[in-house]
Length: 244
Image (cartoon, rainbow, N blue to C red; front, side, top):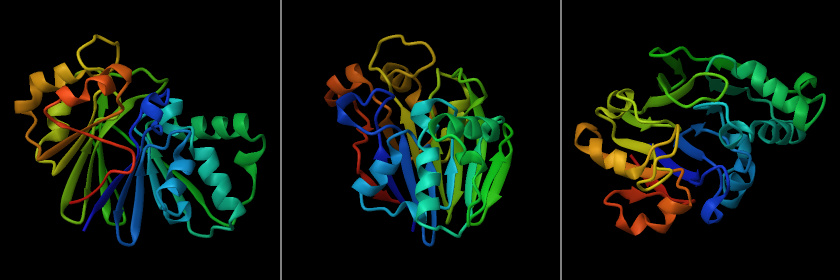
């Protein structure tokens, strides 16, 4: 059984009082996070998940609302004397950017000796990386962030979860969604044009081509939140939990 829980379904600015992007994916005994925004450690505790249980964090791209929670997760693990490895998976450049972020937020923290290994894996586009029971495939999407931005297909326990990350429309999203049991898709705005992001109107335009099962909208800004009752697809809420 795969358990998916939205720990953060908001945008960068906490619209609607929501936490920044962070999605928990659990298949006992393994625990992954998809993205880890600055508020993610708080969100883990708010919803009763022990941060120490996280094995792997997969980052869609290197904007603060998607990866700035890493220093807090690492320091919490250090202070609580974690011993199991923690793996950070992301686009090319993720190792250097995380180290830089750790030095900005907590100087010296990237060089501190720990009881656990902090491991990094940098993904290449359209390759599949297997870690334990999980296999993740990365698809580049248009979203400038100082490094490639990725959408993901995550396979675990016979289930397939797709995640758009942040992206302007691209045909790659049709491939990412194809055959997925669940497609978690950004819908930052309802029908406005905002550079580098998806609108719900665009998602509806292409919905019939997305051969996925359940589709859930996330990363919603103020306009989308105000009009979410007009959406024909399900909208995430912080704490929403489902099983695949």
